[in-house]
Length: 340
Ligand code: AMP
Ligand code: MG
Image 1 (cartoon, protein in one colour):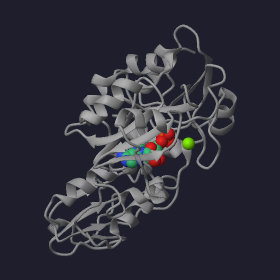
Image 2 (cartoon, rainbow, N blue to C red):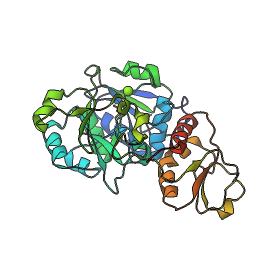
Image 3 (cartoon, rainbow, N blue to C red):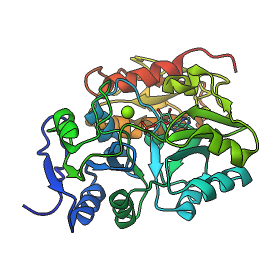
Image 4 (cartoon, rainbow, N blue to C red):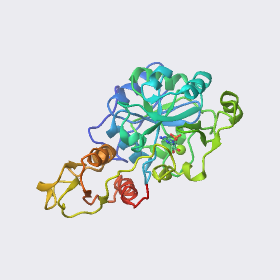
């Protein structure tokens, strides 16, 4: 069979996974699969990545489901070159210098997200910042170029497992969960990209393939080490951790079974609670009760309701199965009291 396998609504664990060699046509097939909302594992210069079209929130939701993470962490958007990166993020002089010197290569920059950035809110976990990188691997570059969109590509393993450096590792972990695996032989072992945030001051978020002294040479000084808690993706929305963290200003009321006067409603499923007709604004994560769809809508819906000038946001119960765990995790964090 040729062409992408992109079932309309694949259930994790039920997708027919194909493995193809890195030969002529592989990049075209991968790009077609990604364009159809599919998941493709491919080698990069670091480890095997699990790619999804970064602008397709449903594909990104499928990626989180395939990896089986109990929470959403922000993903790195891989682009073809610096002009493509400038369409996603705001580059100051320091960012320009680092990019000019080290891209393509194992350096990820966390920058302010540009207004109108086409990357799905889910891929950046609702943050106002975005992680971008230009990879230095021929196949990865060819896939990105043919797709014509940024590609999110975290390591192609199940959550909690080690990063894969061969197609066999990927298959062992993700068979039945991804559409396509491209076998490009062993990847350069286990060195992930170095992550530097340039939000207020340069912070080294993750040591990786690009040594710190290389960065020092361009900055003229060492980047500060991020506090350990910043490396916990959940801490990214904690008050004061990052200049651009996102958390709704409006108070969330979880597991709501009614809507109180002045409240907006974040609904899930078909059975709307009493008081819905008086809600300031109603958005439904998924009228059909589909958790993939709910995940895809979560962060953008929260932002929209946050701007609705409601006294609070009533949030209907979301089941805990599958992606529901990550959705509930994020809702609980967004509802937690904070002091700024
Ligand atoms: P990876 O699993 O290699 O794709 O790396 C993803 C990691 O990049 C996340 O777990 C974060 O540590 C970091 N990251 C991505 N986006 C951001 C962001 N907007 N702000 C801070 N860190 C980020
Ligand atoms: Mg990983």
